[in-house]
Amino acid sequence: MQKPIIVGIAGGSASGKSTLTAALTDALLTVPGRRVSVMATDRYMNTERVGSPTFVFKATGEAMFNANHPDSVDWERLVSDLDAERFAVDRPDVILLEGLMVLHAPRLREYLDLRLFIELDADERALRRLLRDMQGGRASRDPGFIASYYLECARQGHARYVEPSRVHADLILRGDADWERLRPLLLAVVEDRLACADSPDRHTS
Image 1 (tube, rainbow, N blue to C red):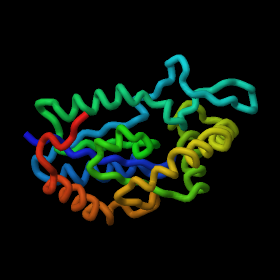
Image 2: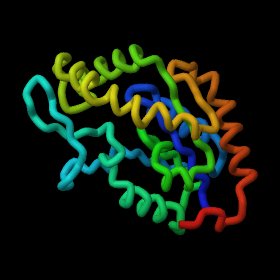
Image 3: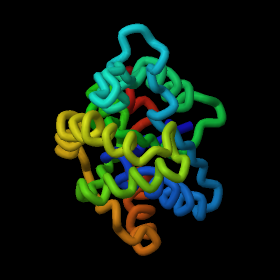
Image 4: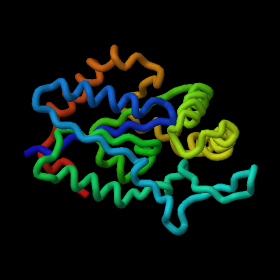
């Protein structure tokens, strides 16, 4: 039985990664018998680990977890779970893996059969992030905190780690694109990768 292909979906915070992942999942599931699994780096945050990356929040002087640094993710656990999914008896045909730094991590890039990067203007991402978090999407609904966190942490992390990783992408997509119109194209690209997949042992780790 062939191992699944893995599609990496990267991009800045609030750029549209989750929206694209959902649209691509729906498109793939229109294919009879197609099995899809979704993984996200948000589930692998090192929030409790000693030595996790932090930054000093200027307003309070408090050291806060830096979710915009590569070391914020437990890559070992993620890769372990990814391997478990790849080799499971009931493994999917396609694994969609989304996260800020999916294309930044060299070890993870080796697993990816298709690399997508979602780009969106910084001001649009900042506004989306503010609206999302104020509606309860994350830990705080205070607009002042959300804006300060973006300016002091998220913006720097994006410039240093996320944006440069776009050079590793096979396709760069706009985060404000009409996903309904793009679904057939994206489905065709993924199905082509499936059809052209190498032998079952194409991935080694």
